[in-house]
Length: 424
Ligand code: GTP
Image 1 (cartoon, rainbow, N blue to C red):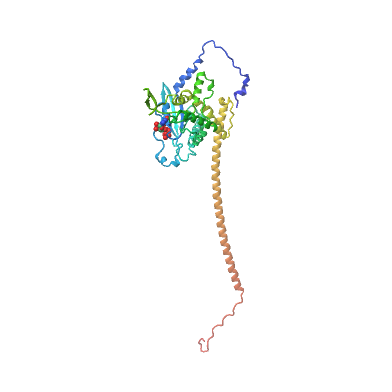
Image 2: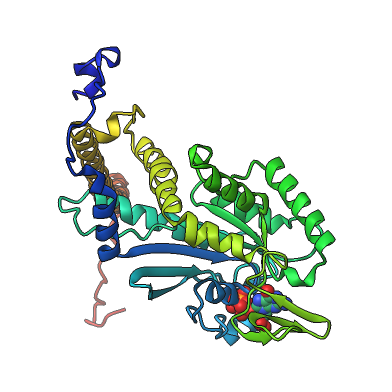
């Protein structure tokens, strides 16, 4: 395949900077983009995971200020009765929401049952399978001839709820995060942070960050944000400083001591406000997820996480990928890659068919061998029988011949008549 760098060496590309004499119109491009984006609408797929009762549904509903997930218990009664084996299920809820004429198509994936079983060794598996299968569907859709209708169901953000124990991460937390961190934009959250004091939260955050670092777990961070304008950089730094976000969720309005109506949780000693930066990190989480980095989350999913998954998958299928900058944009290379993918699929199918054929042939052969052995044993049986009969007959013959050669006894004298004609 011909790539751009083969045609023109990079050092020979000259960029001419010219002043415009009049208004051309491309300064209008952001407006065009804006209009088109608003018309099309936006989409976001979030996965929320964590043990039961940590306030996952409440937080999602608080984030979007409406009931996206209802509080029905997701686990069946029969599951609860058997705590040894509660299976993790995957549930998906979608909602079309609108704010100031801008539409957002939201999909929230939950994993009820996670961490509920006594033996949670493999409870991360259904979650990872779900993430992988969404990548696979996208990869398959991309390889189709018609790609105009490809729907992006990949997980763009993964909110992991940590129990507010105040100690450190549990082994289940570490296992799950290690299993998903290279496939999703991982955002760890300390659930129900109103149950901890400010000092406890600070110490807990420190220990969680230490664990995350020690375990080599990657969490979401906006790329290249330092090159933004000063205010945005400052704002992003403030958001990232709060990692892992210690949040409080509540969709209910309560009255504060000074008479304000706020979303929060009321306690005998006062009110914890959801939308108050001094009370918890909810605002920073919402800024990261929706206000500032929704598109960044999607871009990182597409350009890094999915690309890694895709190239790993292709490598496993025997297709090597060179990660040069131009490659992604080279249609010939792309076509070549797709052809290779298609050929690999065909080869796999052929290998499977061959395996089935060989299995059938070997079964037939075994059957034939069995009937051959059967025939052979029957033949042997008959032969033995006949040999025995021959031997018997020969023995008889020998006996008869022996009798023939033995000297004959003289014949017994015939009975004589008396003179009177009477037999004596
Ligand atoms: P499952 O569906 O079982 O997985 O639960 P969940 O994680 O979705 O929790 P849910 O949102 O149903 O909340 C469980 C309970 O915790 C409810 O009684 C909520 O009112 C309460 N709750 C939710 N968020 C918070 C919070 O931030 N702080 C406190 N103290 N309680 C909360």
